[in-house]
Length: 96
Image (cartoon, rainbow, N blue to C red):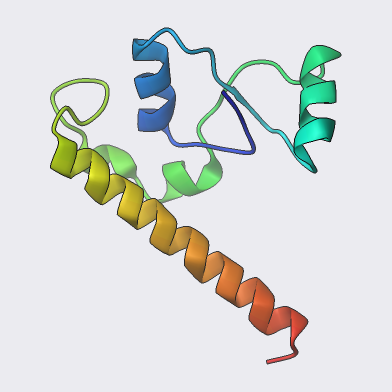
């Protein structure tokens, strides 16, 4: 899984299922894939937002939340954050 960033629990969830994670990708998918294939992208580290929001306060018994409702709640929180960031960028572009 190649990503710009992801939180600790997302990294743990992918690793739990044997999926290698790589963070730090930027630009287009084509550019990120080229970086990965060239060896410029390696390893995964939790994003600064994950660390600053102390997601560990809500950690479940395992490396990630086991129940469907918990995972869905986490996904909704992430989507809300992404929507807020996109709205802020849009407002900035439109000079608001």
